[in-house]
Image (cartoon, rainbow, N blue to C red; front, side, top):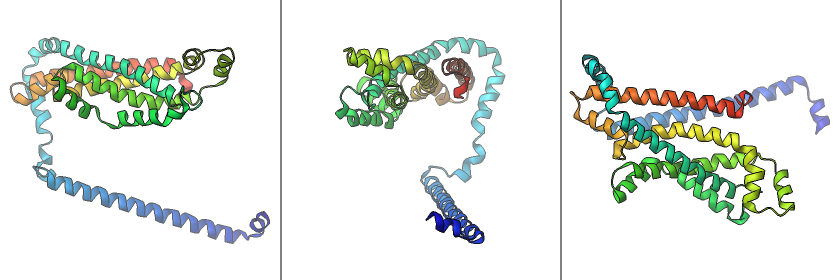
Length: 288
């Protein structure tokens, strides 16, 4: 085959290459066309199912933010007091996110160690623990929260449990991928001196991957703060619940909605900047 390739004339090689490029472009074009058709048809079906059509109401998209800004500016003297008033609700939202992240990270750590080849305590159960992570990760937090609210009533506890379960699934997947890059020589050395499974994990694996563990945990904390605020809209407490109330009343309460938006924005920006700084210090600039 090598001799045949070497004896093939250069014009024939160029012709074959050009034909392959054209074929690939044709397939890519067909794929893009199918994607566009599916997107357009999906939009048309969704628009037809809406109570009001998109084309009839798109020009009103800015009416709500314009009303919020207008009323907030008229009542700007009340803004400092409103920020202080809703600060406890913001603290509750942040607490939900922190506790849920801590519990979810610990659960995800256990799932990841039990689902990583070469590290699992029960190698035959690796598929089981991976499927558990998949299920926890696949179910949205809001679905879990709605079920828990139906069972337990409204409040921060259903939100915390829902976010923790989803976090456990996500961290189980991410940590498992990190574990696969760990050097197994320390684990083999600990095994040779009679160390138990927990000792092998704590002394041989976790010290290697701890910076990446913490980096992913900080990133997840950012996501969970947003999630805990969103879950407040379904009665899970926190600042999201207060935002829903202020938006439900409409005109006359838009200054309160503006204050809540400001608190959420400042919190997310601060957490994002702090966690980004900490992640950069943990995993080093070379990883970015």
